[in-house]
Length: 130
Image (cartoon, rainbow, N blue to C red):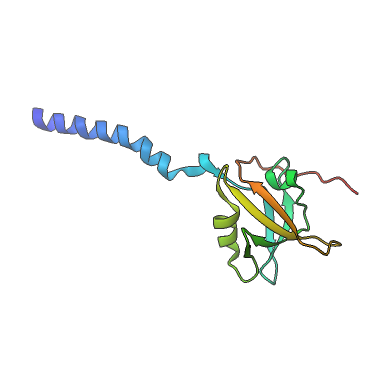
């Protein structure tokens, strides 16, 4: 009985010590960030910005709803898988950089924004009328 009891105590101790580390590795939400864009996939595969999160990196940089994301980190959004673009390119480790290129109605030249991903609280930005 004493050996079994000791083994059980050691197993419980190991679980108690290891579990928080495993939970921390699995739950990366604390390190997880985004740029604060809510977008919809267009027919051509590019992403139309439907709204930006108030105070988020995209909002502060000047990205607006209606902008069309043509490239993320130099890779075209056209012909790419929408969920892959969002999960693997727009979202990432908080504090990491991402470059977003957009087309905006009325502006001939593409606009490039260098953003830093960060943790966000979701509330849409109130855009000022021109």
